[in-house]
Each structure stands twice: as structure tokens, then as C-alpha cells.
Length: 403
Image (cartoon, rainbow, N blue to C red; front, side, top):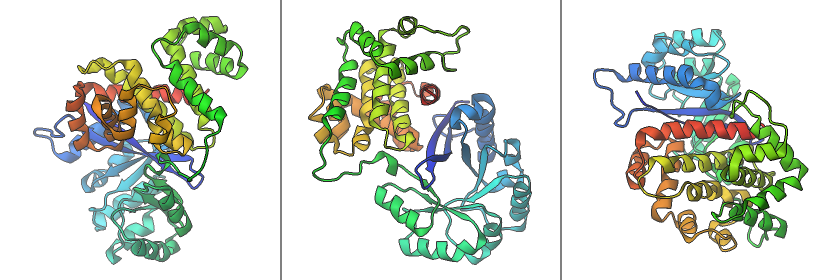
């Protein structure tokens, strides 16, 4: 059974990653003949935790996972390590005595209990008393109700998580209201300040990334770039000796590392190092997300009948968050960069086949499976290979995060 799994970041007040919510889907039709939904979900969870390896999916952070009534009654969360799992009780689970006992048992075993898409009702009080985290949907609940809930529930010692926070303004508002955790894609949106100029040094760095990803960019220029920068040399050796490559013998020379990576690998590496430098004052998840998108787009090329080059797709994914990194409008940035018209049209207006690839990656990482299915058709990608590409991209991004 194919396992479709995406992760959505959850931040603390300092915009550091606290954990990820895992979004699952089983198979292309999301249907399991002769298998009920709870059993199917259990299989997907087991596959993800035990076969893929939870460390590969969330690293050293925790995983937020939704559990239905039946899964809670069957004590399914106990199958998974308490130090890695946050048990999300779905909003349609009623506070019946059996559920309360199940949650008590899980809490006693050391599991963190979160109430998902919470809207307070008096009969939920027993679950509130057991909860560690309460999640509130900023799209489905009014600000007045949210403020009231936070004020009334604070006495129970719970922490509040603001869900579907899509703007920096919403993040700030939630923080002022007393929320400690934040979920959503606000971090990937630019904080545009009118009249703000991009420093020439940063423009040069962005242009370097764009030039490095051109097909005709010379390999000897990349070698010179590495040789004259000690920090890049150090990062290169750390990268080539990281767990991602699983080498038996350590590589200790710059020349050997360059040969091992090859021209394409070096272009990718330098591009990512420079992009990370551009995003130094941004949440780590922003550059990590850009890296994941770049690698995933590149890998998808080999499973698509569209004929788009992997190099162009890598560049597309890498620059897909440049507006948030630079706090500038995408259209204004594209006027300054030596990128192809196809890439510019995709980034600015979502047009063309490259725009379709961007929608595929975007819908997959958000767990928007309906949009994902449409994007798969538009890009002529082998759908069954998408989860493989995503998991490899996660692993690659994690290897770079450690250098």
C-alpha cells in the first residue's frame, strides 16, 4: 500500500520548530476495499513510523498525529514512542467515559494530549482537564470566540496552539493573545515594507545562485568560488561526509569532494549555501522548505512525461520562497534576476507546466489531496513516485541542515 505523507510545521514564539503535524493519505483513491477507515489509518501510521522511520520524517522534533475515537479506544497511540508523538484528539470525538479513560491512560504513560480544532462546550471539560495543548483554527473561529476561549481555559494550565495562521499579522495577534505554538504557512509569506531597498550585496548573491543554475555555467568557475572561501570549503566537506551519502571512508580534500559531487552537485551545493546566507535572519524552516521544494521538483522530473529538465525544476523550487526570504514582491524580484521566462511566469503567476509543478509540490506539502490529484495529471507525473521523491527530499534537506 502506498503511503502518502506530508508534514506541516508547528512553531514556538521564537519561530523555531517545535514539531510537525503529519498529514496522511493511503493510496491514489484514498479508499481501502474491505478495510474500515480506522484500520487503514493504523496501517498508514505503522508504515510511516516503523518502515519509513519517524526520525527521517520529523528529525529530533515531535509528530502531531490525529486519532479517531476507535483508535483511541484501541490504545493505538501506545504503539508509538511517547517522546516522539503528540496525540491529537479529533474534534468529532465526544467526551464519553471510555474516551476519558483512554486519554487518562495515555497521559499517565507520558503522552502529550492535544485537542484538535477546539471549540469549547461544557461537556468537553473532562478532556480539557487532561489536555496539554488546545488547538484553535484561526480560519474557522472568530477572534472574539478565540479570545474568550483562551481567557476561560487558561485556568487549566493548557498551552494554546493557533492553527492555520497564514499571515505575519495573525502570528503577532495570536502571540499577544497568549498562544505558545503556531501552525500554518505565515513563515513563507514576505513581510513587505514599501520603499525597502535590497542591499547590492544580496542582489549579487541572488544573481550568483541564478547564474550557477544555468546549463552553460562553467565548472571551473565553481571550483574557484569554493577555493577562495574557507566557510564554503568547510561546509562542502561536512556535506559530502554527512549521513545522507553513507560513505565508508571520509573525504578530506576539496578536489575529491568536487569530483564526487560532479558539476550538477556542485551547482546545487553552492546555490543552497548562498540561499542559506540570504535567509540568515529568517526562520530555519523557510530555507529548509526551499531546499525540500528544490530537491522534490528536481526528483519529480524523472517521473514526468512533460519533458521539463530537472535543472529548471530545481531552480524553480529553490526560488519559490525567495519573496519571503527577501521580503519583496515576487514580480519585483523577477525583474532583477537572470531566470528563464518560464520560471518567472511560474513564480509570479503560476503559469505554464512549471506552474503546475509548483502547485503539485505546494498541495502535497499542505496535504491538499484534491488539488494534488489534479496537479499530478497536469504535470504527467507518476503519482506513486511522489511520496518517494518527498521522503528523499526531506532526507537531503536534513543532511544540509547539519552543516
